[in-house]
Amino acid sequence: RDYVVWLRFNDGSEGEVDLQNELYGEVFEPLRDLTEFRQMRFDPELHTIVWPNSADFAPEFLHERLSVSV
Image 1 (tube, rainbow, N blue to C red):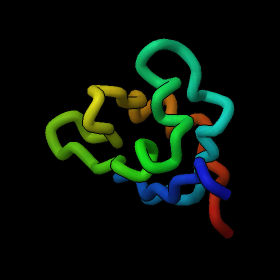
Image 2: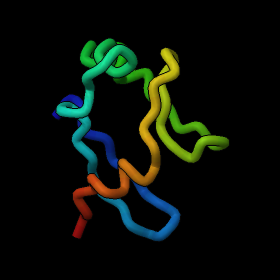
Image 3: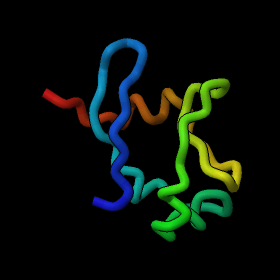
Image 4: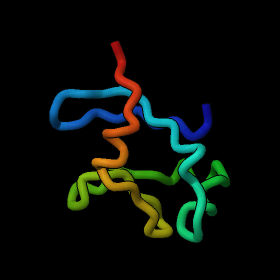
């Protein structure tokens, strides 16, 4: 599952977010290349995941799409 990211939020919720269908538009389309996608990192100032090309998703957006682990 190439575009699935496991996340844990400060409210204690954790699980997976599948970003495959969210990678459209000028900033996100380059991330369809798995080599580019895998360069993701957590930015402690923005409190979200980011990529070297300045792409990022708002934490609220990611939280809404969370598939909670049970």
